[in-house]
Image (cartoon, rainbow, N blue to C red; front, side, top):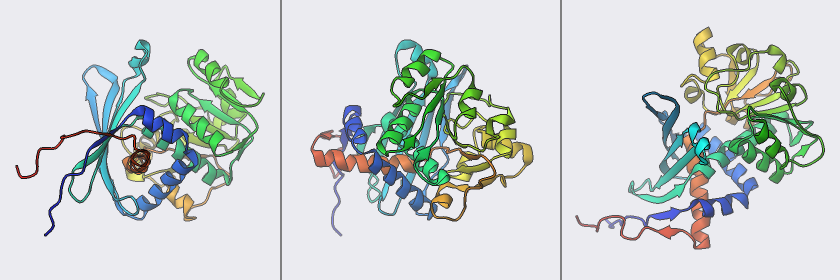
Length: 336
């Protein structure tokens, strides 16, 4: 039986990750698409995410997302991502993350990488993929953003790099200065910072919810009366009534019905999950279709297998470029 040796562990920095992710967003979106299909085919292992919370700090958490993704990817690993909203008061990002990739054959980790960029990329990539699948193309009369932080900016970049035809934008943020800064990055002259959330929904056929809300704050049924497509990336913005009145899609139903997401709260109210039409993979494969008579809401819980897919793709690119940093002698000598 041939002997195996531990793989070389390499470190991939945030600057390296940014360089490669920024250069290939269309390819990233396709990696996300393929990962969804492998997961939907059952060639994955995805335990529930584990939430570490701190006594007396309700808004802070660190989440562990372990998983295995088979098919063309054949990678195991774990994302360890922290969310501390108060960081912004000290000039630090809200989220920080590390991704470890493991060789499934030996279990040894072979890459350690900064992962806040990977996480934001796979989130935005899945959002724009869902938008295209649910609207039938890459065209929007107007796109609205509720929340104009990091995730919203990554969605903006995907929209640009995938050559969407967008007529205008409507923005709302509880920090108006942040919304105005975001507006400066958007093309065209039809860019408006709204005074109220309703101004974003009313004028847009595609709405991106990317807030840090912990409980539902959107309740008015008129927000969805014109049947927009809503990318509910922050998961906890919509009231149960809005959820139950829409056609709902997610990435994995079992995973999304947890941690008091809007979908979870709706399930608790009605005692079933029938209000979820299916997953994004169902839409991609044609198993489920968009109902034009209702608003469509995509609420992705954020699957760890997407991080593994994008992370393994990124690790290959960085290694090919010769800029991965080896962690020499990280593992003990074989034979101990």
